[in-house]
Amino acid sequence: MLAAAHMAIQAAPVAPNPLSQLKDKRVLVINGDNAPEYHKGPRDIMTAKLAQMKAAVGIKTLKVAGNVDTMTLATLDQYDVVFFNYFTRVEYFMGKPFEQAFKQWVAQGHHGVVGNHNTGAKTKGEWDWFRDTVTSMWYMDHKDGSQPGTIHMAPEAAAAKLPIVEGLAATFSGSDEWYSFDMKPWHTTESPTWKDCKVLYTLDEKSVAHLSDAMGAYHPVAWTREDNLGNRFFYTTLIHSDAGAASDFYHSLILRALEYAAGYKDPLALGGTALPTAANVGATAVAASRGDLEVTLEGPWRLAIATADGRTLWSTAGAGPGHFACVALSRPGRYLVRLRWGAGGSINRRILIY
Image (cartoon, rainbow, N blue to C red):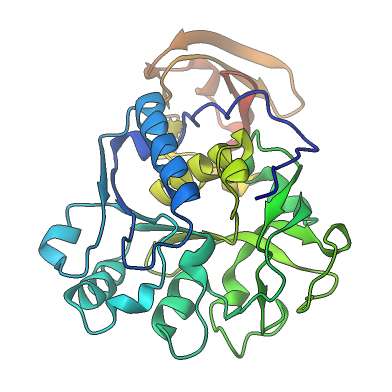
């Protein structure tokens, strides 16, 4: 196995996102042990990293299971997020109790699903529902084995502003099985959910020695999707090698994926109503009453209120949740609310009070 060579080295895994609700969620990690056990090395490495994440975040529940074929909805309902960790051949679930339980669990809404590498190796006729609902792509068997290659953060400007990529390296190089798909990203007929995906990273195909099934200018390797039931899905084709699985980049990517799947809490509320979140930059909160401001962050932070042209009216600092009756918001008008925390965390929100 070729060792990973990092072009954008992270000195350490990213710090947990204080806005994620992962700490309070119940996570089920499925390490399928169906024979033959493909990618056991990377899977074992990631299992160890998940224990580190649990300790760093303080995750309420993180259960690692082997074969869950017989799991019913009554048991699955005990979890908020499911992570298929290098799960080989999910079509083994077809006709088993878990197939129906998982479909019912997803249909309930407001759950999170994370999958990596061969979890998404779904060709036509395996488990088409899983392909269309979770991974959103139709895998094409790779013919070239493991090769060095380089990925880049997606070129869309909006991708870099998403909480899921906060602190992640813009570029990563390593050895992998570079999955291709038999549908192009701009086609939606083969996988009906692809049009709803947000691509996070793409492969630079020129960095790979040979791809029998090259996709051309746009080759996604990690993406997210949310459905109309409030479910959040993350899938990445990464990563095949032990060295890549052990990298700080991959640790960070999977941590951010679990945080995304768990959802984010609103850092600010006005009169009990959440202000626009980080995913809604530029929106204006409108309030008919001059309600109190509430900070829901853990750890140290600094809060300020300014006029629409940037003149500071009031500021304070604290640690942990706080509640303030702000005289600065006592009159109708347009205001700016600025919140800063941790190592570079920040939001700027506009408020219209009338």
